[in-house]
Image (cartoon, rainbow, N blue to C red; front, side, top):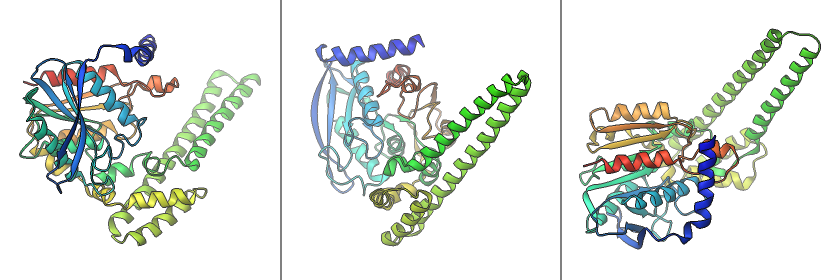
Length: 390
């Protein structure tokens, strides 16, 4: 607990006094052209002070989160990581997605393969810079960005290393179907699931009150404990049943998208399915959701499977995930990623306890800190691994 409090105090201190510190880097606006469609992309290059050459990395975000919402967990993660890496002598290029930050194109039509081509273009740009050590030039991706980095790692002009943070080993449709936040990502939090969780909390409060009454009436501790264990088991079974129903519903919706190429027809079916599960959902949320679910980019991700290209990744790879990640199950996905990369002898796996999908400290998050700070241990591990690549 003292460690968490120290980190929180340090975080606030940096927030207050960080602007007075001597700049540790130089920032430059970057414009480059992707070979996939000749799309112009913008970015920000940060160079440590000194002549170099320095190791370098391109940071690749989750789809659609880069700069659209400066307070998004993904943006905070990459901003914090960029600050840290530059302070440790690593060149960092933040590449803006298509349709964001002045880049041409649109996130709603960009495929995973096109994002990979964009990443290769960023690497080629960095290869022209004299401050960059071209023998230590890699990609760091978060979430879908991690899979983009791995896909680029299988290409002829591959990076010399890949860092995949919270990447998936499952096909896109399976990952999304099993995410408890699938709808949250699409349309915001709906009250139906929140009300169900509230009901469970009230039931446990009632069980505790009943247990107190049993004690007052003379029941021994074993009887009270048996009663509480039974109530918790009953609730656990009910919650598991709810989770299974949600996954089944989400999988059915995604199958509609996959198998119904006509957008108008798919959207009509999806709208009906959403209203049936979420009776109080606002019409605007329904419309926004079904439009997102039927974009070319979303359809592309549903068809995406990381497994076929993983055996072609020959460069060193760091797979890092938080043990408290609820968006990308670390046990399932790391196992599948390692299986696909089993022919690569230079794969490092790191589990970091107490952090979520965005590498934030879950203890600080639970304590009400918003945003919760990014794990210093995770950042230090990433930097040490990069600097260890020769």
